[in-house]
Amino acid sequence: MALTRKIDADPVRRAIMAGIVRMTGELGVIPVAEGIETRAEMETVAALGVCHMQGYLFARPAFEALPEPQFPRAGQERL
Image 1 (tube, one colour):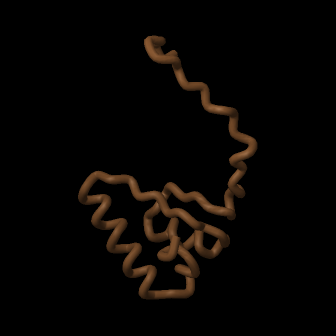
Image 2 (image 1 turned 90 degrees about the vertical axis):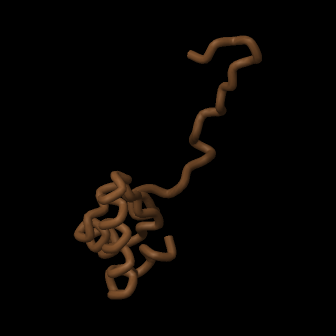
């Protein structure tokens, strides 16, 4: 998240992100940018080649809206 904050206005952050995108591409890893809070950050990260992003720009955390996890009892198969 520290890397994506104000990446649109920081050439050093953009250079680091470009290197990460290049490296992950060579390794066959899909990068995910987290902490995207502004449209400018999103557009900059997308222009650098990151397709997967998350952050307040897209949705606020809503932990209380998640269903209660259902764990299988010992000896029961998972569905």
